[in-house]
Image 1 (tube, rainbow, N blue to C red):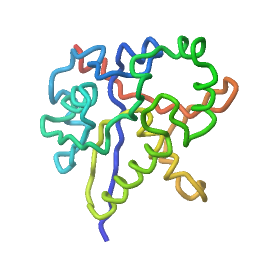
Image 2 (image 1 turned 90 degrees about the horizontal axis):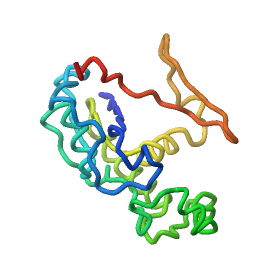
Image 3 (image 1 turned 135 degrees about the vertical axis):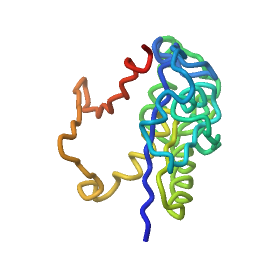
Amino acid sequence: MQATRLTLICHARTVAQKLARFPTNEPVENAGLAADSLSARFGAARRLLCGPELRSRQTAAWFGVDAQVDAALRDCDWGRWHGCAIKALQQQEPEALQVWLDDPHAAPHGGESLTQLSARVVAWLTTLQAAPGHVVAVTHPFVIRAVLMHVLQGAALHSIDVEPLAAVELSFVGRWRLRLSAIDCEGALS
């Protein structure tokens, strides 16, 4: 039985992320990398997928010009919160924001709940199980979080591979958070 390998890559930073806003269909903040500039990072035998949003497509182009848009990799539908600043919601809709943070079934913004997002992502993962080979998917932070939550549920200890010299970064500010490091693109911008 051949293995399916999945590499998830979060899209490059956007102004909305920098300003702590829910996303819109904005471009990446620094689109200075040339198309295909990071393609050598993964072998030619990989399948390159991305979400339909501009920021995902722009980032995917850095890994190859053959990216296929997959609607299952789209960002969560934030409803009327698209483009809203977190600080503004804390002031204007503190109860709605807290409900959303506490209840994964809630969608006070009128869009997709985190439970709905997770179900979509799990269905997508299921389709990959029958497709051996390496899939590189450029998507969004919440999609990657949903994948990690699905993979790590239950007996998480046996769901984690730690490679030699691997580094895992955690931070604590009220709760423990896992930080996944970004790919260093500085050399590619020169």
